[in-house]
Length: 483
Image 1 (cartoon, helix red, strand yellow):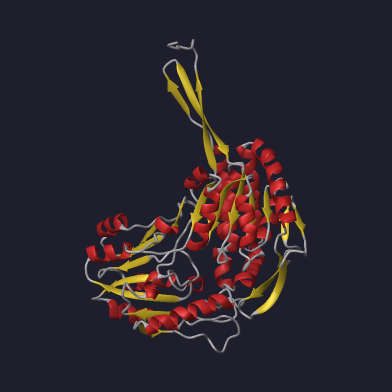
Image 2: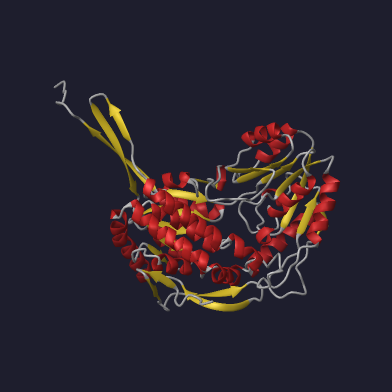
């Protein structure tokens, strides 16, 4: 596996400027530095924006069929190199190779293929108006800025780049400073597939670099995946210049298990919604509402399965759970575990740092007897920590599930499908699952409501967030003016 050869990728080539602040890339399983990149200087930022602005005009002038062909070629290259890309993702994030081989570059390739296939179909509309008519033109926005989170660096780069490029935009992508490597490989592949130089630039940096890019008047749109706090800051800066935005932010999502649920499926769904990626998934169903009549059995089965989760070297394909992404994240998660114990929640399993492994490993942790007022039930932890809350009635659990500032996701487990549909209609969440959890195919819109964000990623819905409509009225007769 060849790591990226410089910090930034601009105008079709790697670019370095070591005068920018150094950013050490740390492998979370060992705590060792595996690479170093440098934060973008103002000169690098200017180079990236100028390059993207110039390239976007050329890219937009191509037909949708031509753009789509390039994106589909990039998808094929990504699949051919899935193993190398997965190894890099594992080194960057600490996620086990067992997971990255099936969930990261593969989903990025799906996005490139899907939007590559849509690109030629992005047409306007003809509207007859008696003897006159009008038509619409779907236009690209221009230069789009993508700001990524650290948990899915390859996937997020593709989820943002694919619809933006399909619509004729250029994109500047700033990865998280915690996981800066994978987006550079995405840029390599896109340009090898034929993307014109400058259409997808990658610049590294901390929040100050993101701020420079957001405030640049040549940037027309900002798409952020990150925390609610960061989202509010970026949204305010974008609003000052009336920029388009997509915000995919955090959550504290409810997963409701009714008394008639298939219990093993419900436990499996709660596993996917709390332990996958060591719990570092924005859509996780971390408030698990379990009907009181089945709570004991649910906890028994969950604890038994949690005890079998194999933690260890993420490069070993038998490993099922890796470390948290950083020491800072480890400290944050351990802090919440202490708070949960202090608040009086019952620790069912886990609760400790794994002492016999190097790196930032935390045991799969489950709290029971959690109440709505506890901090662990209100704040996003972003680690393998699940809170189980009792409930009695459908009306009660809907009200409690909705009593949060967040609204990203929700899940329902029940054999009564009429109830399942009724409950998800009542839940204030943008992405819901019935009898499963955390599946996010590119064909389905993904995004939240309330403080969890606005706009949608994936599916045809994303096209609306990377284009604008121009309306044209065509008169075929004389002008009828009353003056």
